[in-house]
Length: 270
Image 1 (cartoon, rainbow, N blue to C red):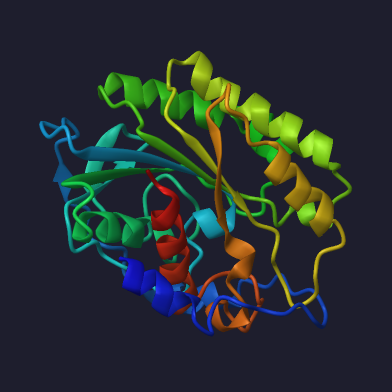
Image 2: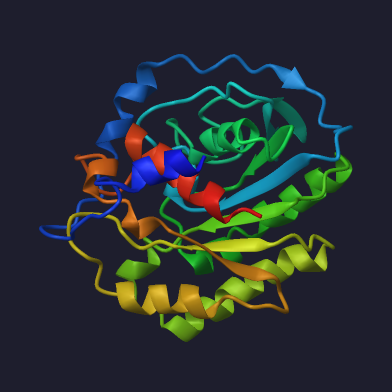
């Protein structure tokens, strides 16, 4: 795994910001013609103590907005928060929006191939273009439902991965407001008895031009780290440059960027 991360880090992850902001999702157009993957149901119950149950939340780059779909090669399953059932993981993952690829599917393969887990269950919750306030308020029901379905299935998360910030980087939110909202969101899971580490990425890049509020959001993401709430620093996904993103918007990940994103997360998961 370390060789994979090193390879992806060389010449691919350092990007520059220049030119007009692009927010097009034109790269998803071709995916609409593809047939949805076959959904193969699997039992959610896990008998191995070496199973990772990973909740992935945030906005589009945490969802199914990559340009290339991937079907897991290893024992990676997708817990669907809508039905409360588990399926063999195949992009687009059930539970998040978008019709393309997800870094989480690839992450599961990486973790199993590295010998760190025997099975990975991914729980996708990401909603594209979402501000942190939107996820914590208008779509708090998304979290409430996921908690209910996970408990009904007898699943307790081992990790939370949160990748969000691109929308807020174009807003006027302050670092203090961002950290406060993030703590509120995490407390929703903590109140349910889910105490697994909550990894927070540093993510703001979307478009050729640097968003106006990048510094405040990145500062908020850093200051939100909190020992008492078990909030930990995750990867800096802004280091994935334009070579790893779609030329149509310089925001969403191409196949290289999606794999790089997965490798970055794999390096942080303990």
